[in-house]
Length: 224
Image (cartoon, rainbow, N blue to C red; front, side, top):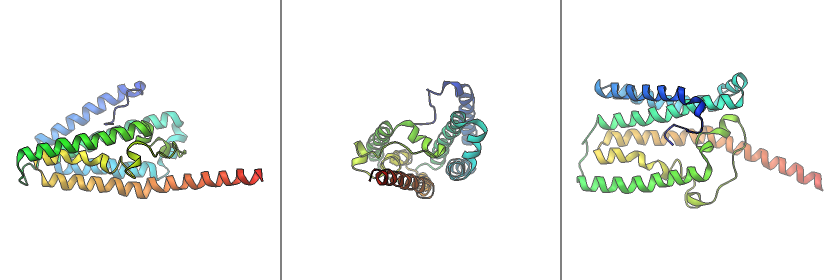
């Protein structure tokens, strides 16, 4: 859920050096107080970059050039780096803006721990039920129908547990360190994933559902 997919062993030799580079870049940002440009980079890389890949013909070009399996492996690698650098960017933003609001430390830690356990638990549970390929937008990248509509687990209570409750743990670092700027920045990131959902992901889901209904209607018409 943070980028590494251990079943894709063939690309680990590429992923590991890139992950190490991302970490060293994050440390360089911290030591040189470059948290603002890195935050812009992390946000742009993930939200704009992923929207461009999944919302334009870039994914079709990749599939045509490399084939479905290899293209998706490459995309998974890129998306993993997006996840990782996005997380690093949020971390650096929080660390650069500590103690900018004031609540008792015990309250901050207690609230942070409760939110993390609950939110990350919902995120992990949602991913476990829907599958890691859904988390990695496989159906959206390959322009294929995803899995069945899920109404079990957290999906019984929450409409979109991955993006909603499941992302609240991203606020925890800012709460514990008491970074108002960190809360605002992650709030922007949280809002951005919903914008991505409504502009890119939801239209795709709706289109596939309509296509499936049309297919079922034609099959029903043939029988009668």
